[in-house]
Length: 114
Length: 110
Image (cartoon, rainbow over all chains, first blue to last red; front, side, top):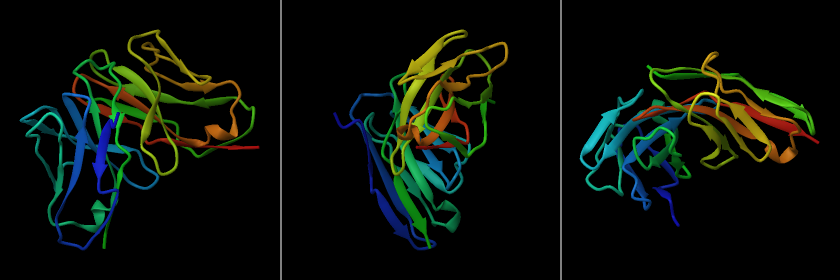
């Protein structure tokens, strides 16, 4: 059972470059999330989606875009990368709107912008 | 909006010591509360959860009770082990999103 799969695991970007972090889940979960974790800090919500075709902003959406064309996939796009976007990115999913459902995390993507 | 405030670390304990990590929250409605653990280089894993007031979540010797009157969900363990060394996150889930505390790094020394 793969769960939540993120790619790539590590990436170095130059300032101004763009890239997409991929996220896929095989649990048929409706809810999916992108978080970033800065060194020594907690998780900040970037974007989330409650189902295919529906996305919404979290706490720190600036500099990012998302799409949700299928239930399984929730890619995160970085446009014009900046050093402030150096972070660890986690994708996560949850079964439904019920708040008691466990949220499952991918293993993370380490991104460095130089 | 919803938010979580977590005791700042780092926390260093000797093996078999008692652990408490404080967590308080602000929320509308009836959120669920969670503790997640993160080992070095890994993603977050669920440790325990509670979905309504007065519920007690427990796992691997860790416990936390959902206290609505004090808006708290403190994590406790009676006797920590070296293998418990990790970062612990308190989290709150509403219907759509999930918010995390800043995390508390625990180091347990033999």
